[in-house]
Length: 93
Image (tube, rainbow, N blue to C red):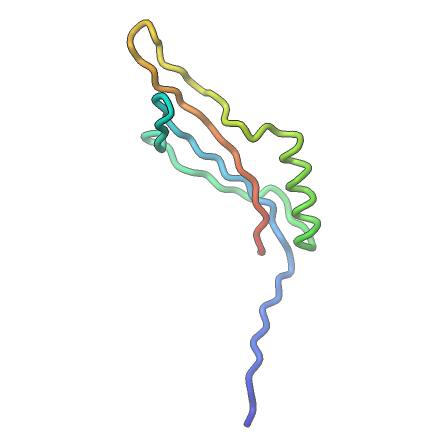
């Protein structure tokens, strides 16, 4: 009886960034109308550890707090805030 061994080899790890846009009114935030979540590769690494180290360095130097892109005019009764947030992750290629 012969058993089949299936091996998955990961040859590289990719540091990915994901950008999301949300519209917030007070503490209630929802995906911003007409926007998409965008993910893109930043750099490839030979090992998961090397990718995680790069991810940590990026997260330490770049603010993970959402950036306010547009704020409504409070004088006109608009209190919606458009925010952009970036997240980082390592994924096998």
